[in-house]
Amino acid sequence: MTKYLTTTALMFAAIANSSLAADNSNALTDKESTSGFEAIFNGSDLDGWKHSGNWKVEDGVISRGGKGGSLVYTTKKIPDDFELRFHWKVGKKSNSGIYYRPGQYEYQILDNSEHPDGKNPRTSAASLYFCMAPSHDATKPVGEWNTGRIICKGTIIQHWLNGKKVMHFDYSDSQWAFNVDMLEKRGADLKARGANLSLQDHGDPVWYRAIKLRKLTDDDTLDMKPVRPVKIADDVLEAERKKLEGIVNRRKAA
Image (cartoon, rainbow, N blue to C red; front, top):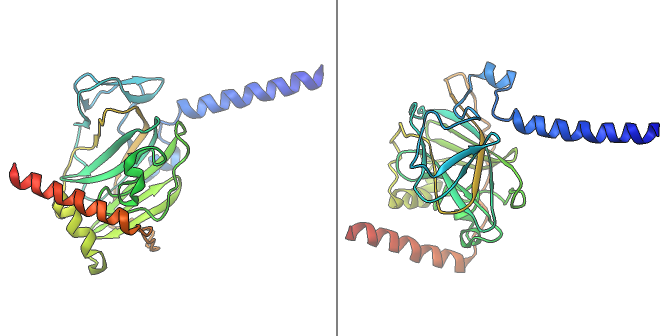
């Protein structure tokens, strides 16, 4: 009996600790507070955010509840140099994204295994969408929480996924001239700053929590270890070329 009670107590403690971890994910840790982060999602409602009634909060989690467009943080603009941390998960075949600079700076949120965009690393989860592929697929299975980070300082952009830096892009480096051209053709202005953070509504189930932001200073140093984007197959590159051509032609015709 004693052994049974001990096992049961440990089981319930584990469940309680798991629930507590989920409940506390929106709160700043002591280290985050010291580092200058602020929680831009309060965990209870969408105060400070703008939407068309299609986003909701349940149990400390943001999710889309219907059609209506993106969820936009309107309290303040994103700093020129910043670090953004967030948790995300998707449903089967789901697609979303986080826009963090004016134009087409998007951290792709995706079910790589089922969504067509997962076939091209340059449009897969944690990519700088249609610009720079991650080094590898570091996503967790559909329905599980992923942790993401976006770090921008000067001309350097980093995307992190589940504790791993999967993209390091310095758009002033000539080796990435092709990627810069792709980003500009999508409509990005490399020098533009001061966007409102935006969570994309792509019509699919998606969940966010633990959205935390801090401004980087001159004293903040970056992890400069290079990571290389994964190689893209020739047939995928050809499909990508046609898709980009269509984007450019539609923009010209508009």
